Image (cartoon, rainbow, N blue to C red):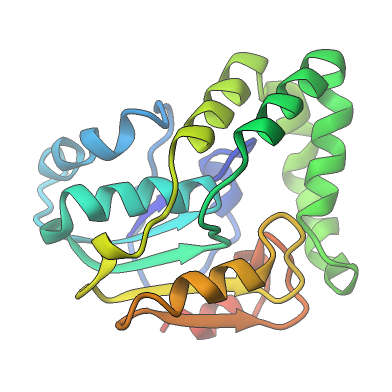
Length: 212
């Protein structure tokens, strides 16, 4: 399974994921180029097809990959997706990052977890939050915001494909109502909700069960 992480995170966010696949994890990539580079990545690894999971910004990248190279995907999983992010809001985030990068990221990471999912937040803080606060540089963060400003997930390219949307019921970053509306426009798509989870539902113990 190809795993693509979201904004302000990297491949290490999937370290606790425990599902029945071998993983293909892009490590150092441009969000603008990855969808076009993936066919070569698969070829270099001797793979004709993969399952693909994109979380948050990664869901946009997997959607783009599906749109351009649908024959290379067996199953697509879009986790914590939303149709689009506002350019105006993203531009405001840039200003906040320039003013206090660590402070904004600390608040963002906190908002990725629901009140009911404190255990997952504790694990994230223990494993990765301090690392991310140090290593997520401003240039990379701004590139991700620019990518999100220029892309949206549209239903038509997904028609006829096996796609599952997996979403936390308590997601503050990508409210579930928006993805429900999107899924309603894709006949073959399925929406799976994880109760009590926020924007990182793959850290919930229930995630393994719904991915089967």
